[in-house]
Length: 205
Ligand code: GDP
Image 1 (tube, rainbow, N blue to C red):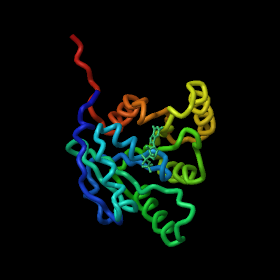
Image 2: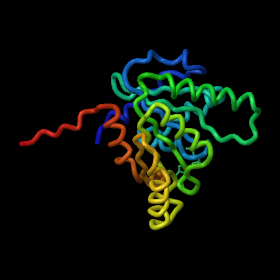
Image 3: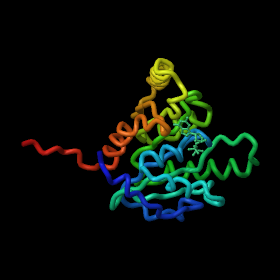
Image 4: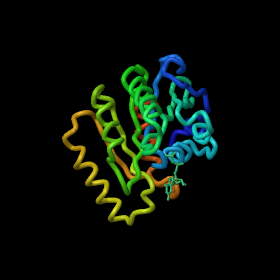
């Protein structure tokens, strides 16, 4: 287990990509429909109950929120999506920001897509898939709130989602996750460790 995640610190919020920290180092972004459990997942993985609350403060919900992990690694909390009733102008602004970030951010090395295990692969999630495929960006899907499904229902959802994605050529992985039950955190850490290039070398005797 890599303790670096527990020292995560808020860096800044950016209303546009040009306000983001310098495009150097390695970034992993988290995206998901509003209410899918993205903030809870970030808090669970960093063991900091306050961290993702920053992204939920008024004025910051539609921004890119940056968190420092290691010396050159960052987590980015992307604005939630899936608002049925917001004005078109807000949706267009969200779409432009996501596209700008996902297409142009050089340091972005992987995307964590947060989906409610009870409703995976909704239209906005499909849009996310298209964006990642466009640049062959590694994608890891966490199916959250797995505690709300029985063991067998969770397993069959996992298999079903994997099947639906099997024809996609860009690198994709999927796991079950529960912030409530602390399920799947080590699996998520392992994906992040790899993308962030944290050393996993073990010294043999
Ligand atoms: P966000 O809008 O995607 O950041 O979602 P939040 O993390 O704020 O979670 C939305 C709601 O789902 C909150 O009421 C959380 O308590 C709940 N929630 C989040 N993760 C879990 C989980 O793993 N299990 C359960 N049962 N509820 C969860």
